[in-house]
Length: 77
Image (cartoon, rainbow, N blue to C red; front, side, top):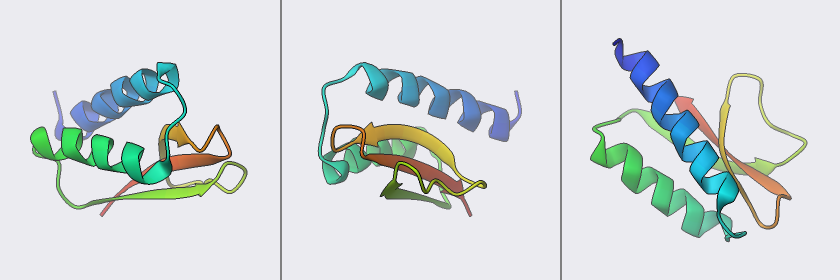
């Protein structure tokens, strides 16, 4: 399995897990997801909280925070 495919599957698993969880503050969710990514050896990425309607086209949504008003997005590089 290629590293990019593994990262994509990991992000999908994180997104489905966080979607089922209770609403969280963005900083708390960001710290949890960053810890999981780093535990898997993922490096060279950014996680940012953005308004739900302003998700960049080149980013992957990995979570929702602040009662759905913001999305946590992952970008590699």
